Image (tube, rainbow over all chains, first blue to last red; front, side):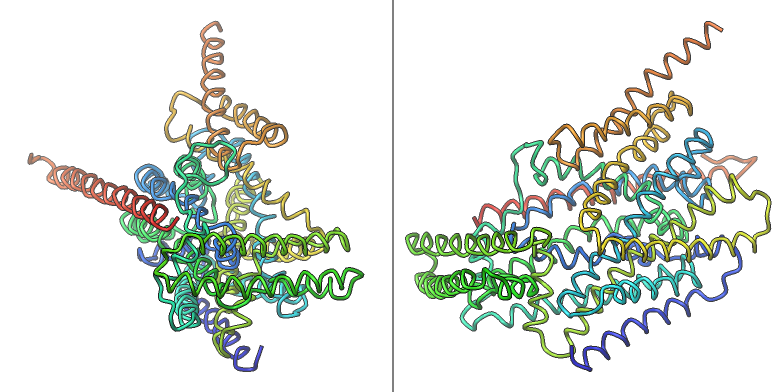
Length: 560
Length: 49
């Protein structure tokens, strides 16, 4: 990176941190620290909710995913607007009426302390580990492509977040997210314009979409009902609905964002804003991947988007084999490029030529796979999946000086915005649901404020530590992601019973939650069920088992 | 209906009534926009494959 990129990156990040600290000065109690004195307008609520969900990996991974697998990932978000409606209509009025600091606080009012503590603990385990990955995931990509030290990259992202989250609490998180989301939206818009400008003169937007689309990249909707398929219309609407309901309605990193809103009306506007804009925003990010595919039809794509993998092969005993593959790859690319130009001149009507283009693409994909298998032979521990590197590799190769710094700032901003929400939520759950409720009751407000700041610092250090451990333990990442999807369903099930099944009481829901958790774990080990369905499975178990148990308990009480 | 003993009741009830129908329109609009988006995506899928 040039000094101009460094200047853009550092000044953008510092400006965001200073702005957040300035807007959040004067924290005096836990209400201001965790709820920002309920002062946020609707647009700040909406952008804060969106910024929390959009982690750095969203921007790094989504274009790469569309480039390789097409746009079908968008279906994952179809249940989100429906979940926003349920949250606006049912969750928000109750949270607001009870004036809660955390979502789990509500569960004690409805059930009992043990159910509140169980869900709070499930959240702390899952979100605590995930916060480390929110830092680690972009740090590993940045450090690989820019040759930065992973430890210092983790420290830079985590350290900056700790500074403003520690001092400014929830308000600092929300206002920095406002700035971060603005930078992110500007960044992705500039990226799309830049790709369009880099396309050859004779290629317009429609041609670019046709080239990618005919190669299967515009596979946005899949109407087939297949329970083992991760993304289709039905898993997107049903599974996505329950996942979004769980994430936005019961995950404190999201609940903590919108309970800072000025009023029920402002909060509802903020969540509706998210419901309207989330799918178009995600579509736009994925569409960058589609444009990138067209761009690489006329510009040779690297065999490996992670340059380190190529260096491994060049310096290995498989170097000569790789050279042969590389030469074949180059000549097939040139043929594909020439054929595509002929096809465009024929007004996209020559089917025979298109078949030849598809065949060239298949050969290129095959050669990429062959190269990856060579790496696996050389070093089995190497991760050959380079989807997350596609977009950033492109930025570093083709973006002008200054804009690289801006795009790196976008990635930092996205990572920091998610991490800050997580730290704030982890601190509020630890202090409000565990420390103040069960460990140190009846202390002064200033004591709890100090404890809250300490909680933020401790969870921040924990997140950085997890991110550094993850560097050394590749498989841990997958384990933590699975852990997250396993717990979400159970937490949601408890909340659904709390809101909609008045018949079930504390004892029954607690036992049902433990059983649902075990069932989900069994399904994870012994079935092929797509993970989105876990969010439907666990709540169903909790409701059915809860109803049965409550019936038994009622009968026992009657006998007594 | 006016409550002579307590005018506040009329105000709060009227506000509540208006409030729920107001939000119902927003929710309907959100569902409609989702249907339009899915339909547009379906068209793009068919048109470009």
